[in-house]
Image (cartoon, rainbow over all chains, first blue to last red; front, side, top):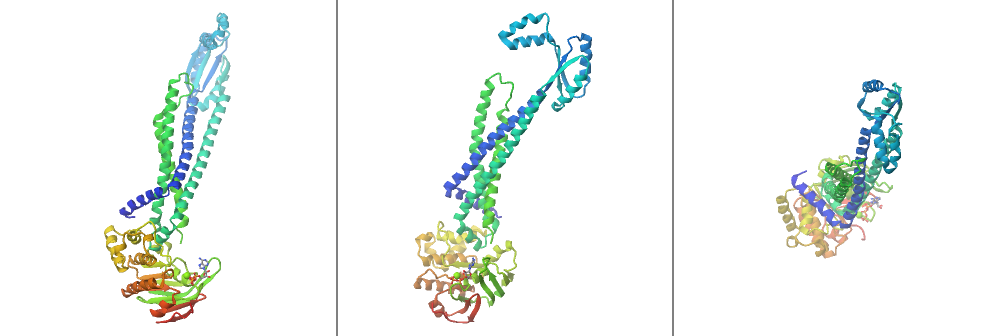
Length: 297
Length: 228
Ligand SMILES: Nc1ncnc2c1ncn2[C@@H]1O[C@H](COP(=O)(O)OP(=O)(O)OP(=O)(O)O)[C@@H](O)[C@H]1O
Ligand SMILES: [Mg+2]
């Protein structure tokens, strides 16, 4: 293709958008709706991923030491724990500290337990963290076998359910995004098909005077690209703005330490690039699908 | 220039439009294609610029066999032939000048080349003074002259016309015929399907009559030969 033709194709593609005002509006709206949902889901999925991996970091095994164990027994147990493969960190929580936090967590009602101070019924606890969260299971079973261990607790059930839930959300999101992408693609294909029908005579004349298929295709390629990219602008702005508002409001509401959201930057930028890419892909693909048929003969 | 050897055309719906045609048209000839409605004239003409592909046989134009040529070469073959129709096929939103220039733009000619050539052919069809007009602002005869200008602007060796005067009154039809004759005098081969008895019988040229997809008659300076 010659350089002067590129300028022509771009201005033709742009003119087509304006000339077909309502159809352009319909297509861009379709892309906009699709990308709003895709973008929202992207933000959700990225945060869920982040949530899942931060949860994984928090997975820990609580080792309850026999009440009868002496201090030397406890020392032996500690070194045994340190010898287990895959153990990352060990924290000792003496029973007094355990009772303190129990009383604190119960508030006013906790006062009842003050009387227990002298004959503390709680166990001393080792909190063990695995290097690799998936190995928590194995480490816990190993620890159960050790002497002076009364009991081992770890959040296996809850966490497994959580992991299953997050992967379910990821899968559903992926399918939803693919489904919406195809919907928007077909909408664009249909819109461009209508504009092609409106310009059937023009294409016919182009073919008659010897224009190549590539030449005829170019303006439609650009039109599709513009539809996709323009359709991405509103979702990017709306989602980035709402997310930053949401994020800063979450930042000020203390106490939600349980779940750290991803910061707006670079998340918004990543989302913008993805949405632009998806929009462009969907627009170009849709337009090429509808042009193909019209270029035969 | 144009050679057809045992050409057959059956449309996908089973209509046998052309049934074994052999013809040779030499460079610089002016040929009328006549015959009753449905005889296959348009099909015959469409195969020349490869809008329709023959089912069987060879069509050789400028050493290219249209029956065998690859799809991607067709645009380049078409650049060597101009085509005009009964309904002009102008683009309504482009001016006279732009309609003609369009044919050069889409084969990526340079701007300066386009300006020179377009004014040149508008002079040939005597429409230089209406270059800025839009199709709806000029008469049917003038519109057909724009279509002719567009067809010849890329210097084709052949000009193919399917009932170019079909929509025009007798006087305007003669205007078009004089322009076609002028173009023929410059060396361009012309093949023209027509139902216009008066023109064929007055401006005597080679006449090829097609009936039921076969050549029924082929004579130099022939007459129309049908009642209408
Ligand atoms: N695209 C098509 N598909 C199927 N059949 C067709 C097609 N075009 C033409 N035909 C048939 O082929 C035959 C020849 O048609 P054609 O248009 O070549 O005739 P014609 O001589 O140009 O007629 P007219 O003088 O009315 O223009 C007719 O029976 C017509 O119905
Ligand atoms: Mg016909």
